[in-house]
Image 1 (cartoon, rainbow, N blue to C red):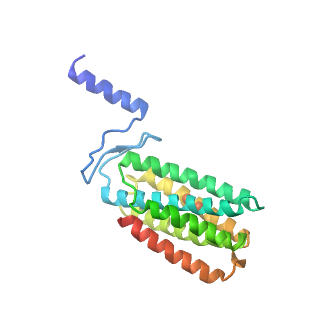
Image 2: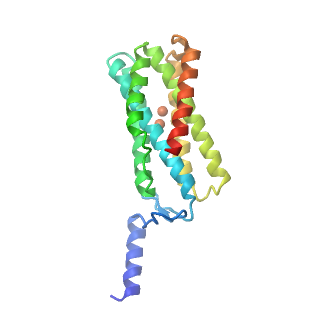
Image 3: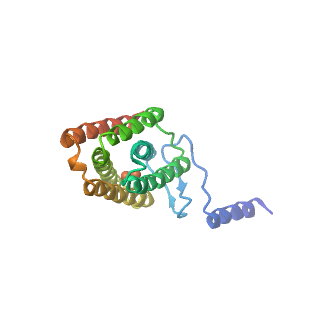
Length: 217
Ligand SMILES: [Fe+2]
Ligand SMILES: [Fe+2]
């Protein structure tokens, strides 16, 4: 087989299998094929995509640790199955961002060990206030994450939305599911938590700091 035939066969195999195309590890603008759809994105803004995937991965990881903390305290109570269902969705969110990190060669934030401990402590700590405390935490965090995802959607739409269509679809889907979690929290008496307004404000201030740091570190 001559060289041109070998290259053509290789390209055809990649098109059929949807395998990743090689990435330029150091280039600012790269070419990427998503595994799931086979869609090719050319000339993406590497810096913006790095920042988005890193912070979203950190956020979904933190959400998983929060629900783990809540389940450690409330897992055997009547709200256990409700929390478990939300946690299961967070596991899917994290799995997707793990895949995107590999596909785009984005490194995780160096703060992951910190979010591991802080997330679990926040989940368990608010759950110790009762199911209302846990649900207040859920409302505060999910509202912050949905707001953050909306900001990212606006950012990507202002660039070249057709290039980022699959990433936009992921973020929109997850934003909608975070809003469902927010509503579930309200339906389960979040507003009856002790010092609800203060608790929510403090947690959301923490979320803003976590987002700021995870985008940059
Ligand atoms: Fe999530
Ligand atoms: Fe969520």
